[in-house]
Amino acid sequence: MRSKDMWPLMYEAFQALGKKYGPVMEQTANEAGVKSPDWYLLLPALIFEPEPITAVRLQARSPYTSQNVYQNRLSYLVEKGLLAQV
Image (cartoon, rainbow, N blue to C red; front, side, top):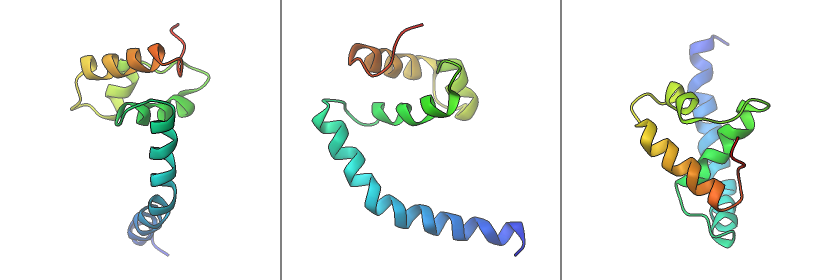
């Protein structure tokens, strides 16, 4: 299989899995009192480990989102006790 043929299959798998785990993740976040889309930052936080998640690192992944937006979301997650300030 050529690598360019892999991406449509991966996207299809992502969509199929998302139908299963998406609602569960959303419900769990609601039960924890965490609003969308702020809880989505918990996923890259795991990827960055052991380094801390920062607005600068997040912006490198998604450069069109303001650092202020990321910083506000990270601060919100710290307030909720889901991230620790370093």
